Image (tube, rainbow, N blue to C red; front, side):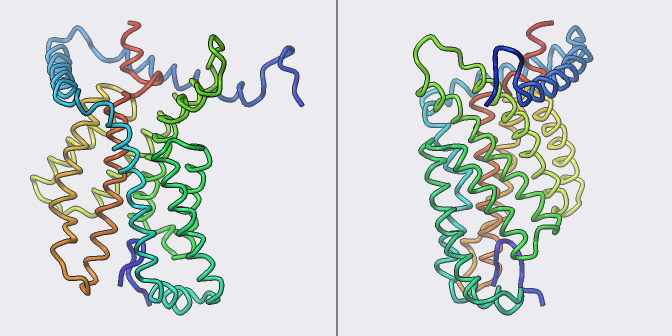
Amino acid sequence: MQFRGSQFPGGRNDSFGAHPRSQRQSSFGTSTSSALDSIAQMIPSENPYVMKFERFTKQVEELIDGYLSPAKPYVPFIGRFLIVATFFEDSLRIMSQWKEQVYYLATFRHLYEWFVKLFLLFNIVCMMTGAVLVILRRKPEIATGLLSSIVLLQGFVYGLFFEPVFFFRNVSVIGGLLLALSDSLVVDKRSLLMPGLPMMESKDNKKYFLLVGRIMLIVLFLAFTMTIKWTIINFLIILIGLVSCISIVVGYKTKFSASFLTLLLTVNNMLTNHYWTYGYKDTRRDYLRYEFFQTLSIVGGLLLIVDTGAGELSVDEKKKIY
């Protein structure tokens, strides 16, 4: 039986100075922006090969925008739904395997049965509530906090927190949640503000969440390289994927790179995590289903990047200046 990807083991004055939080954000933003400025200036834009590459990526991005234009209004919703798909799946798994879950945690993790039942019920309520809030763009900060806390809490309770593949995958899931938060943040703030009032704080928060979310999201690729079988073809896939990951982190040709990774992960997910081909009593079915829905969450985060781009803190934005 498979559980969460494991196997059974054995008062301030604003007129006289900036708020400390704003100062910290400004310092972080300045240092990050300076680093991105340096990277943008290092790219030889006049090099003929770079010019050809940028023309090619622009054509691909325009092609993607053209084909996806009818579905574009729905892409953010689809992305948010995929991000939280793993939480819906996990809630259903707990409910359908309640006795097995209680037995596992009570027997192998040596926890009190009453605590186990309370913990599992808490998980179901928090995951279902948080997932619905993310999809509906309601209380995004609370929803992100709930789901991120559940990810960390399950890691500790199931004893998987320091298991490398589990750790990297869940860091990526949290990265996807931060991207969903950034997607919802400005929408919620705009609805609360009077016309004509500035939205500086929510705008600043959005770019920071986008940056951190991008970085955390591509950590998935580290987990991918740890589980893949090493062949020449897979080595080439990893090499190209790694370049795409770096591009997403620094925000260079972000839509192109995110589109490529979305395609790569989707195809790989269908080919390797085909849980539907196994019987209901086969333990591999639970493991592959867990892997399948976690990868869907990462794909959802990448879709949000494809839709919104990298944001202000990116090489793409810096290159518009130079």
